[in-house]
Amino acid sequence: MKNSSNKFNGKNKKDGKKNSEFGYYSKNTNRSENNNRFLHNSAKNKKAENLKKNDENYTFSSLKRRNPRFKSNPEFPNKNSDLHQEFTNKRNFDDWIWGKHSVYEALSSERAINRIWCTSEIFSSDKFYILLKDLKLKGVLIEEVSWNRLSQLTYGASHQGVALQLACSKTISLEQLIEFSKHNCQNPIIVALDGITDPHNVGAIIRSAEAFDCKGVIIPQRRSAGLTGTVAKVAAGALEHVQVSRVVNLNRALEELKKNGFLVVGLSGDGQISISNFQEKSPLVVVVGSEDKGISLLTQKKCDFTLSISLKGKTSSLNASVAAAISLFHLTGK
View 1 (cartoon, rainbow, N blue to C red):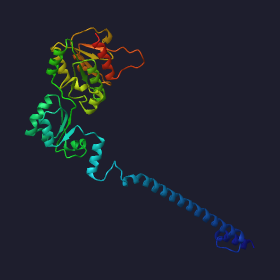
View 2: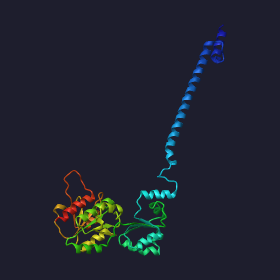
View 3: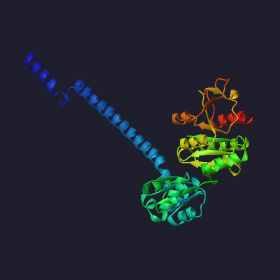
């Protein structure tokens, strides 16, 4: 009995899964297998359901993202012509001209030009070279760019290597401005802009200059906004009544003005004299710098005086156009 018991016990431990005569062990094993199968199947089902939900969410989100690409979205038209038309409508090209023949006619008719973009082939062309060289000497900004860059600027238009932006008002030379100012006033005031690239500020300063009877405004060729449509709009008609000179180099222009009897004063937060205490009555050039950098160091060296505006509040600085208006009010009231 002992051996048979040991034999039974060993067989039961080894082969108990196959033995159906002893219900306790076999029954528990089947139940365990059923439970394991059920748990495995339920986990598998949950996993499948989760995968299905993820797939549905991914499909829904991807369709949600991609659907606008297949709709008739006006921002992304299918045809190149429609794309160009859409972008040109968004960006105001009313003052732009491109194409060899159109640009050449505009240059030959002596229309007021703000800026020119051209490729190296156009600039070296005999037909354009003399015209472009003369305009550059008059202060018109001419940029030599690549064909691709010009296509970006015109949004894919057929530019043929050249494009220009018209100015809203004609400019005069510095010599003409000096002569005009001296013949129309005993102590004229001219405003010079140094590094003001915001067209809204340029337009506002021109408006203030005309309102306080300044005889002219000087704008450098580079690092300054040109006489664009935005400038004309903000100036509110003042461009029709004030002379503007666009110069290649502002510092050389200031030297020329000093030779002709003008005092050059710069507006600066660190000015040596308060503008309310400034008593000079000779012809003046008032230099207004940009808001972030102010007047450049080289231009400051050309100034005979630097003037400051006393501020009483907590604000540490003024907008460039506001500072110009306050200064012109003080200087023209003396």
